[in-house]
Length: 271
Ligand SMILES: C[S@@+](CC[C@H](N)C(=O)[O-])C[C@H]1O[C@@H](n2cnc3c(N)ncnc32)[C@H](O)[C@@H]1O
Image (cartoon, rainbow, N blue to C red):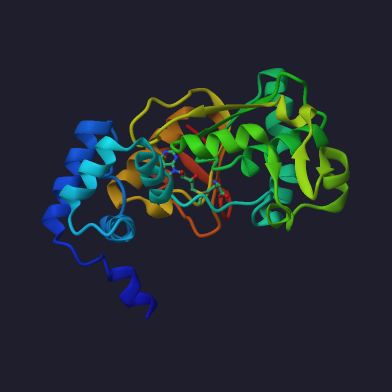
C-alpha cells in the first residue's frame, strides 16, 4: 500500500503536469523542477479536484486570477509539520556536545541558519539553547522558508500545545508565557531570531555560518537538487561549522563535499 501510494501520482497526464511546472516558473518565478514529481503532482491534483476543475490549464487560470488560491497553492505544496525540539535527543546532543565549542570559537559573531524553518519552532528551539548556554546577545539565528504564511506565523511566535510535546517543562516555564492555553515565546528568545523568505533551490545562500539546521526538507527534493543543496550548505559553513540534518536524512558522499560525519545527523566542514 505504502509503495503504491509513493508511486501513485494522480490521474491527469504527466505532460500536462510538466507544462504546468514550466508555466508556474514563468508566471511566479517558482522552480518546482527540484521536487519529486510524483508527490508534487499528486498534491496539486488534490487542489485541482477541490475546485472541481478537470485540467492543469483551468487551475493555472484560477491561480492567475485569485491571490487566495495562489497562497493556498504555495502553502499546500510544502508540508509545514514541525514542533519544538523535534527528535529531542538530537537537540540535547547539539546543546551538550557541539554548541558550546561552536560558541566558544565565534562568541557574539556566532551565526546559525535554520533553513526551511516552517512556523518557527526549529529556530526558536535553537535560540532557547543559546539562552541556556548564556550565549552573547549578538549570537543569532537566521530563519528562512519559502512559505510566506509560515513565516508570518513564525513571527507571531504563539503555539498550540501539540507543538510543545518534546519541550521540557523547565524550558516551558523559562521561555514561554501561557496565554489562553496557547504558548507565547518570550521576547528574550524572539530577539535572537531573524525571519526571511528564501527559496533554497533558487536564492543565494548566507555565508560563513557556524551552524546550519536543515531538517525534514530535502525529503521532498529530487536527487540532483539534493546534491546541489548539500554542496551549497557545505560552502556556506565556515571551516569547523556544523550541519544538522533530519533523522531520516543522510549525506552519502559527505567526504567529497569536505564534510566529516561527527555522529548520525551531524556533519562538520573540515576543508
Ligand atoms: C516539514 S517542514 C520542516 C520544518 C522543520 N525544519 C522541522 O524539521 O521541523 C518543511 C519546510 O520546508 C519548507 N520548504 C520546502 N521547500 C523549500 C524551499 N525550496 N526553500 C525553502 N523552504 C522550503 C516548507 O515550506 C516547510 O515549511
